[in-house]
Amino acid sequence: MQRLIARAREVALRAYAPYSHFRVGAALEDANGSEYVGCNVENASYGLSICAERNAIFTAIAAGASRPFRALAVACVDASAGGCSPCGACRQVIVEHFSRDAPICVDGLGRFTSEQLLPDSFGLQA
Image 1 (cartoon, rainbow, N blue to C red):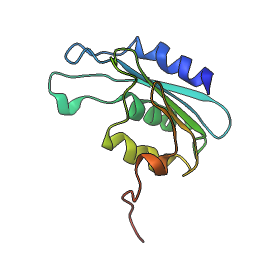
Image 2: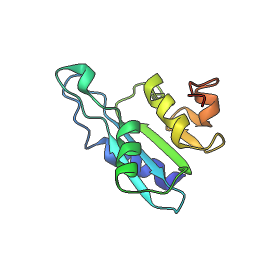
Image 3: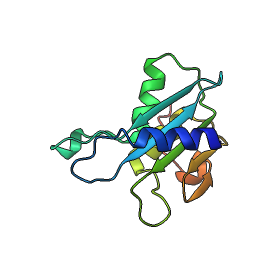
């Protein structure tokens, strides 16, 4: 997990955050051990911005990564006290693409499962 945390910190430095000045990086490992990264990319129209966690997950999916993903690390290089927890939208995406017991490491805050981050998450019933 330390390798993923280091990669998340590294990619956070590439974030495009001219408005919030809050640079976040994420790194995930897929079912085959391949790694994918993402950082937050802001836009003047805030609703068009993308968080690091979703950026990493969507990049992995676009690259054909094997699911369910094994682990995720999130790091914010500008967090003043400890770390930053994934937003609600990212938590919902995490739940859909990681097994319930996959480790989600939030740098400065600890280790969680997707179930702990978003209990009773939304899901479509067939």
